[in-house]
Image 1 (spheres, one colour):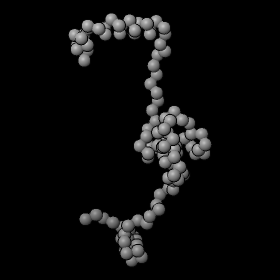
Image 2 (cartoon, one colour; image 1 turned 45 degrees about the vertical axis):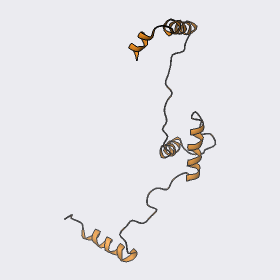
Image 3 (cartoon, helix red, strand yellow; image 1 turned 90 degrees about the horizontal axis):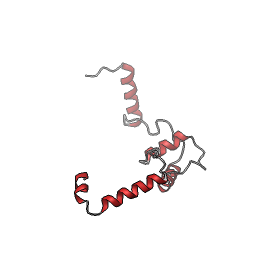
Image 4 (cartoon, helix red, strand yellow; image 1 turned 180 degrees about the horizontal axis):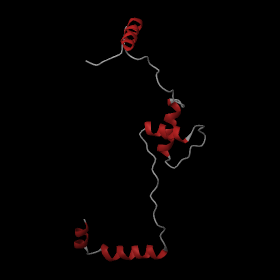
Length: 111
């Protein structure tokens, strides 16, 4: 049996007499800064164009991030790739031409 204070038991009984239920009242907790409509708009805009900024939305960055998380999206940084020089591109093309035709054994070992 769980130990409960006498005051807690009295409060639960009083709540039951008042509401015929012991559930918490709705509306507990902090209210959302933005409406559900604006939240859906943010998620839709970011889904359409992932690199969009938060221009036109007068809320903090954390509020936008929270809205995106609720919408099932997460922020990722694009992977940094080295800049290709002309010699890199020609080397890639040379490699592709050398290994494309007649080298099936090579590609079988790769895959």
